[in-house]
Image (cartoon, rainbow, N blue to C red; front, top):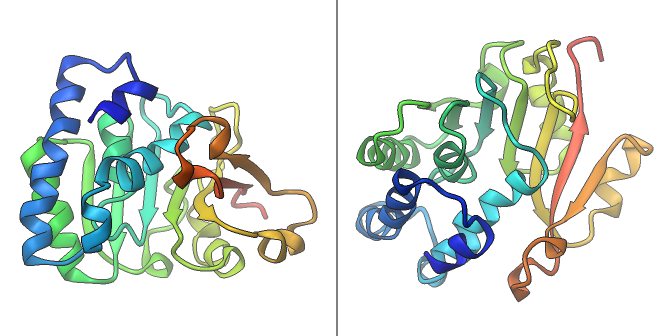
Length: 211
């Protein structure tokens, strides 16, 4: 929990309580339905919670923002961001029902009214509803953008235009080459000093329904 407060010291008491609950909740549910590797469960706050919150170093979601988290797995990055931005609305989807069960149980325990969890595939989600679509290492960038581009709302009200925000790592030159400068990459090692973040990035692709 200390690592979260190190980088986000201005949390409300309620947010601190919710973040503090995450470890016990995920240990309990991970023992029943494996959504986090055994190795990573001991580094939950660094490798899952803080990594998810890297998106908050790129953008501050304004009240009323609608956000889709595709392939959320156990609820990352959606659940940590939903705690941080309680006035934004998060739709967390995954094609695996067992994972969505964990997401729903954690969401209920945290009493997060701004989260909806659903078993669904990205290409079947209702179109033109979201300011931003998130993912964490779901697939290569090009097919992912094709899946979700028609779900992006044309109404933009952030400094960043509506689009896709993906948490990725490693060498991304090949993935982003076809976007010809439209992609913007934010290095998380500029914000977080831990070794885990040396190669971690947020990849942003602006989109609109007119594309």
